Length: 279
Image 1 (tube, helix red, strand yellow):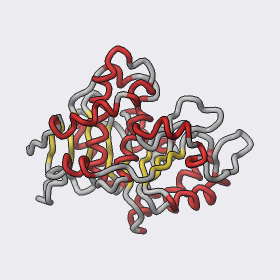
Image 2 (cartoon, helix red, strand yellow):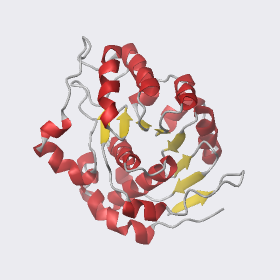
Image 3 (cartoon, helix red, strand yellow):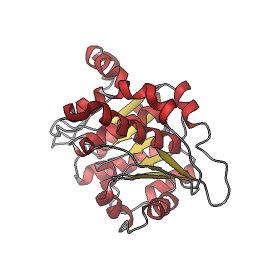
């Protein structure tokens, strides 16, 4: 179930048409700036339904040669090429498997300031900020596309300090400071928007702790964001689908790709199961 908490200022609820938005929306074009040749765990998927097509139609995915640094990874020298390539995408996922080199941090900041499309920032993309949110604040001032941050508690603490006992307040605080939607992962996942609206996704199974599961979640959210759904709705719906997919995968969900494969089975149940409840 998703529990919705309205903006304290009385702004219109972003949850009223969430299910309808998802029934009508389909992922347009999402790009993942993720796995480097030496990082084997990150996943890149435009949507669950296009996974096999990605394998069969590689020419549709690999469209540009991007220069890598001496370590064989994306770095600051890659930024110009990536920003240019991102112009054809409706959403961009940055982070899984990028590594922690200094050049990566420079690249991530350049992308935040140069990519106009909505961004999902996950994993090493979050770590690249090092607690300095100025790049996100400047992006908001420039009027570029919205950003969704998807930290687990450790990443959250590196960005904004301890989560504390009130996870909703913590997520709202970071969302306000970063001018971005925040999805704080955990047994109870909290999504907070910069304006104060918040969602709580309180369902899921133990298989969500499997390696790579967070990368799958980030990819789901990027695909939903690419369809034109608002950031808060995309994050809340992505978290819900992620949880439901783990239920369908059950004991067979041994690796993240099993979770990914279960998403099509979970999707039809969305409209009949998702409920909005005002606090």
